[in-house]
Picture 1 (tube, rainbow, N blue to C red):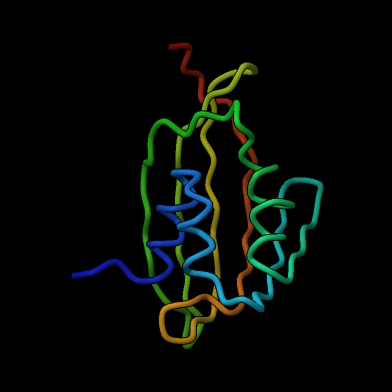
Picture 2 (cartoon, rainbow, N blue to C red):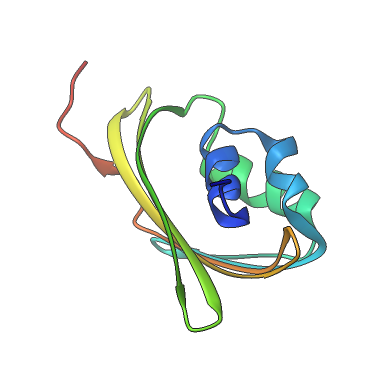
Length: 125
């Protein structure tokens, strides 16, 4: 079975495949996100990638393991949850994000993401 648009979004995001992320977003995306201590908003795919995602996942952030991607629904709202390991010069971390979204055909029109932040994993290798 082919991955749904939420799973494709999560896989592209975790690969830092910005073209892949943009491909699944509606040109008039309605985005809001919450990371520990900061709300985020964007109204276009380019703003979302350049102003939000590329700041969440900087070039020095190596997302080296996807632990889980799980999709589901809450009535007519779609959901995808993804957990991953990331390392950067500051250490090794685990992070989880839950994305709730509305989709029209094969694009996400409304996207809300809640993030745990980078949590120290205890790995040192």
